[in-house]
Length: 376
Image (tube, rainbow, N blue to C red):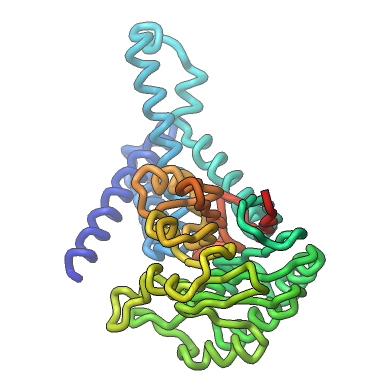
């Protein structure tokens, strides 16, 4: 693990060096005597403070510095283009631009605005709706499904706020509620775990609330949790929530839930069942809704007979522009929204009820999803 520490130290050093040049440029623009010892000390202290803020990789400091540096680099590129394009005119003029660029206030001001928006975004959970059509012979009125994932309870909403959102979701005339993983994580206390599942169990629906594991719900070997997996199971089932861990659940005679264990268990001694193994017991004339926390193996799910895959995990990128990077690099088969897998299979990836660790969400909304499944 030494190389990880070394890499992190190198990144931190690079950040510190850039921050120092950024701060020095600002001081020069405002006429501060940067050759004086006391001014150098102030610049070094400011650099150290901002760099130290980044040591907690899951904190707001990392996001603040990330946006300031990103925006400063964009302005630096604009400054370079102007300098090369206008040459002598730039050298003798552009005084207003030089003050704006040199002061460093624009990156800081815009970052503060983005973080305020991101904080509001994280704490304001909205409804997102989709309608999925099928040629399969489902009941005339179809089915309405609520999808909730990535609550990471304790990051944003408290118990009372959670109850209020659950009351709102209850009013949607639901047939079933799907909790698609990462409802809690290693930072969630046992009491908070009891609270969140108690609140979610109050959502009214015809067939009940179903839960499938995410990669954070269960205690992980590298991260300590207050509760064990068995305690988590007892808490969930105590509130009448049905756990689907590589299991099939039939609803009526035309609808099937396929609840997959999370992909993270594939690295353990007992990997999850393949989608083909799970489908052996499924009548494929039914509408098949597959629940899989991580949006992966879409092609396999489609070939196996899944009609609709629902997932979470990505948080919609959570921090812009990470969502764009995720779409380009393809860490997952989907990042946010609706995807057509093949002629018979679609997927919906929710950005999640909250987010992980960071107290802001700047790439996508915090949401719960309502899916209407209708006969075509």
